[in-house]
Length: 250
Length: 210
Image (cartoon, each protein chain N blue to C red):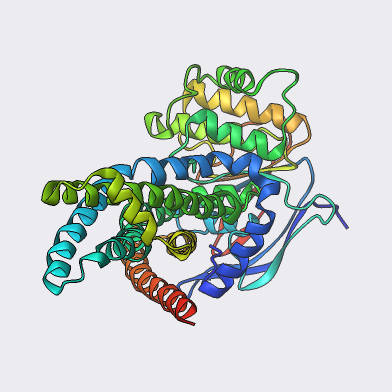
């Protein structure tokens, strides 16, 4: 069974297929739609609940803590930092990794064991083009959609907490929040979402296709995929945050 | 020199350091029927993988005709249908990929007609898991034959068919062969009677014997 053993060879092949995918889209567009639906809409429940709780929690603890420090005016910056810019995109990434990333690894692993991938290859259908590229693109789109929902719900959680604590009117909350927003607070989460989707889609599919002949390899590969993705996500988000803060400080 | 669309040249292949195929030399003639018989563990599936370029030989080579390339339809020892797609989607994938002419019909009509011909009416929207093994192999056969390839390769040929089902599938392969398709069939059992000449080979001790 032929496999791409090294992640760099895999990335090279993936990049080539990404560039030429439009030529094969007539056979794999359905896979792309299914991936967006599975990741972007069916994961909506856990994403909305976690974002609402995060927004509420940050608003509650932040308001209490900053009031004690006499820095109450910074609460909106804290909410933006937590919900919109830094913690939110990471939480979305981890939820999607646990839900859809593991699904990609185990599904591709099962397809390898059941010889479905062999069947595609003998038909002349590249598994990279048919299975991986639509999943990676779908993952990027889905995370962009979910990030938007996460932000909206997280801010709703924060507003409801403020209203519950101090009866702050919505227009007041909205004006103060938009005044605290900068352009970077809008494009940094977008950059993070795109790279998060690429990272989860690529690593999880790599481990799925690396399954050999034994079914016992599927959970082993899923564990490896999750561990590596979590570390890579923390590293990626840390690097982007570092660069963006340095950029803004300069 | 005999013309061939596929040639196995001194092919050797080991699995976990155990030599399975020790010296395979054979040239498959176009429009021929080749029945390769071999007991369990003699390397039929390994030979199928090598022919299909899913594995590379340790030594020797598998050479397809340069003009036609690897134009083949394959059925493995499992049906290998895409399990999270419906039967119609499995067949539509092959139709779209090979750009099969639909003779003026729309794709759904064409698939329904194929399924009716193969004795599987109203299975379009089912997943492979809802069908029996024999039914899944029939779908795999439709998928493999749909674009009329130069060669059709079947590992564990006919093994899940008996009685009328076996006669039906046998008849369909005879029809495909009549249209010029070469058949390479690997099985544990001796060949069943064909209306055409059959090259019967025995895979034994890592070698192909006439």
